[in-house]
Image 1 (cartoon, rainbow, N blue to C red):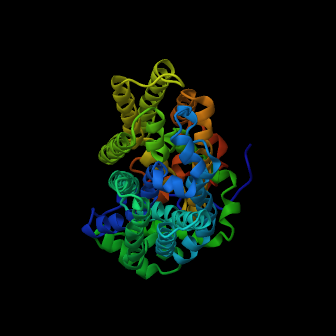
Image 2 (cartoon, rainbow, N blue to C red):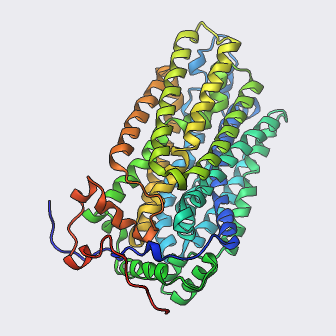
Image 3 (cartoon, rainbow, N blue to C red):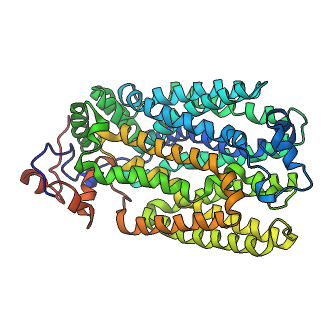
Amino acid sequence: MPGGSFAPTGVAKERAQQYEGRVTVFVVMACMVAAVGGSIFGYDIGISGGVTSMDPFLEKFFPVVFRKKNSSSKNHYCAYNNQGLSAFTSSLYLAGLVASLVASPITRKYGRRASITLGGISFLIGATLNASAVNLGMLLAGRIMLGVGIGFGNQAVPLYLSEMAPAHLRGGLNMMFQLATTLGIFTANMINYRTEKIKPWGWRLSLGLAAVPALLMTIGGFLLPETPNSLIEQGKRDEGRRVLERIRGTHNVNAELQDMIEASELANSIKHPFRNILERRNRPQLVMAIFMPTFQILTGINSILFYAPVLFQSMGFGGNASLYSSVMTGAVLALSTLVSIALVDKLGRRPLLIGGGIQMIVCQIAVAIILGLKFGNDKELSRGFSILVVIVICLFVAAFGWSWGPLGWTVPSEIFPLETRSAGQSITVSVNLFFTFAIAQSFLSLLCSFKFGIFLFFAGWITIMTIFVYIFLPETKGVPIEEMILLWRKHWFWKKIMPPLKESDESSLGKKSPELGST
């Protein structure tokens, strides 16, 4: 329904073609350091599955699972079905969900660096508690502190990368977060493969080494420059201009600076961003902030990455073979993310999301068919079919790595106007962590109940999300972050939802603003 008049969102004129500058070493280094925050997220995803498959760890904290795993009469699909073991993995994400909401006002008021630093410190504490845990309570307390670190880091790092990157390379630089995540997963898998042989304390080394990326993230938080968008939002325009000139490598930043100033003026007039984000003019971004992270998790990727060793052992692989297979999937994920970085600013977001979705659907169905026909309570996978399952899972992981993996974070982080950007990112992270928690807590039970049907369950969701992208997501390639608000008014569906602009603002759409003089 058409609404009444409203104060238009800050940026009402397209100035993208007036943006100047180049990719500087400074901005690349800043983005690389900030992206280390992603390696913390990835390291935990990779480390959890390996540790929960190690006999000394299970014997100490989850003796029931240890006995069931080594029983000669076990049900392959249900060997690891234990709510306590699931809670070890999922508690981190529930804590992260709460922390990401707390991080939003801190990120907005004190800047992106503050949240990055707090995330690193929290993760250091959590890694220390986990490595020295003597009982289940201490282990879970450590997981909760890790979750706080992830909540702050995942809230601030994608925003930092989106705001520092020039518009024409924002996709690639933003994906450094996902690349760091995949490298964290791969590193964790490699470490698990080695520490599994160190008995009985190898699991402590696996959990304790999480302190390394946490330390890098903490130091980076102190050393990184604040983003110009955040500085201007805090009223530090001169400092914001200096940082912008430095990261763009030119003094002629007037057009981009003016976009930031217009966006910050509206941002500073908004006292309740979470309330503001519910308004009609923010409806498209809110829908994407909810559905993109939801769909990212419902691909089923975290089930494979969390529980890769457990999953492969459930399929009949030996202990070392299952860890080796998870190392392979971690390597494939890291390499496929590089493909996405190379293509995202050339092909765009939509082709990668749709193409990756189709490939994932085929792979999930193929795994379900193989397991349905060749594996069960009384059947073991032959060597040939075991290799085939690993290959198909690697193809699935590759498809995720060049599509929904990085773009599930990139798209939500780049679409919000400045006044709701921190709140929007908090919603994205909270939804992501909620569904991560839900899947982590329920996957082992679902595997026990659905058996091979679990892969068809995820294939159904991937079909839905692929159709969703085709219909509702406009292409954001090359659109400046502060002009993203104008994109929705050109989309066939969202322009019907957005409230009307005032005539003066409507006339500026699609036009170039006059060249700005120096400030």
